[in-house]
Image (tube, rainbow over all chains, first blue to last red; front, side, top):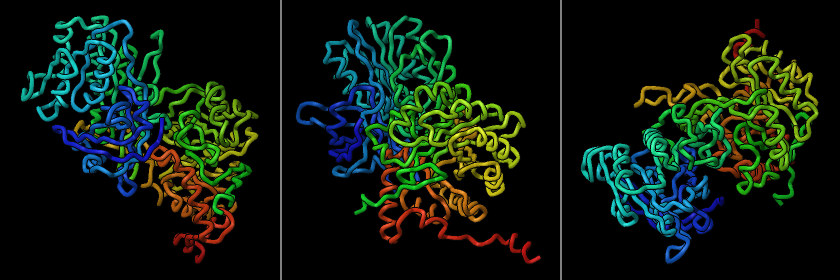
Length: 282
Length: 317
């Protein structure tokens, strides 16, 4: 984990979202899929907490070496609106990489990646790393409408079979990501499931994987104070290894990636968190 | 040279390298800040609040932003005093003096926690958290009543071998509570704990926090902190005061000292900027130089507030 003053290399609009690419070699070198960065807000505003943003892309090699990309939803709240208005050559105070990353399967080879809205951003980094390890990747992605589906063409490029769903049917099938999970599992010999998003989606994925006895990892989103383990506000209820007791652990340092079978979903109220991992009300 | 000027302070017999401490609940478990700030340059660290038994704390979400602040509630999640002294205390005490924050729902629970801390290495002081519910007298805030402040602080102070700081509740008339704590044997006062607050999720039509109600922290609190510090300093001029609530910059810290504080605690600002406790201490050094004074003690209580109108009337009568 490093704290750096990172220059914004470029920004671009991606449907409903805004992507920012930073020059941050100290963080980019270490970043793994599922991890996030904590970005400081300006001093003179009345919103003050850092925004916690999943790493969408981290380049260790090639012409983009040392760069780091994350994605915000400008409509989510004042912090992401501020980030969305920034232009290249500005500077951000960034701490990262933070949190536990996804782990890659050693033996198993066929993976399904599930996400909706902006939460999908972190899964592309994962898909790339899985592909580099010779794994098969399928994806189920979605959003409320066409604009809210994050980079569907990129999803096609990174995976064998892609299911795209929107609530209103403006892109792919009409329906929800949850509804599309079972058909995707029936269509290919999936051995491992990865998901990112909010409690309703992740708890549904957890139930499906439990019923099908599929190993899974999920990246959770919970409101964070600091992002590096100081305040204990990003609580996730997790069962003990033997399943007899449970306790709250921190999403920021004990997660955000968890085994969904260990999360006590019934104790976890759906927060509707949307800004980053996340601050503002929806 | 700025770096050679010492801003070490002695607060009720606790020697601090700088007058800037990390407030309770904002320093993690002792490992998290490594690499983000040099803890040897932090005046001191207040631990998260520890109770007799482990507590799982409140349901998420536990934090939401409000204008210039945060509304939060962790439900005092902590591993219990026995696990704390075995693991967190040594990690916290490795780099800077530790004030252990303690709480209970009954007088006996405060006494039991103090008993475990008695004579233990690495405990520079005890900070008595008084904002939790009183289970014995069925009151929402144990420290909002002078009778209970006297009992709890008195019991802890009689048992403790290290100085006892009483952290008084926020959002209440604090002077009578400060007087009670002082008479009961508190060595210093921390002013104040976060006042009670509520955040509402309008779209879901329910409280935004899992715990329902919460506590307000952050820059929004500074004027309340200054008022409490100034009033208590006027009532108890010799009692050391640690200002807590809304201190974000060196300028804020200087204002708190001018109101009567000997030191400050930095909470929410540490969550946003882990180096804030060190940056603020550096800024205090610069401010002392600019004012050509030797130590933070020279700023203490320079700004006096007038006698309240009600007291003036009594005096005339």
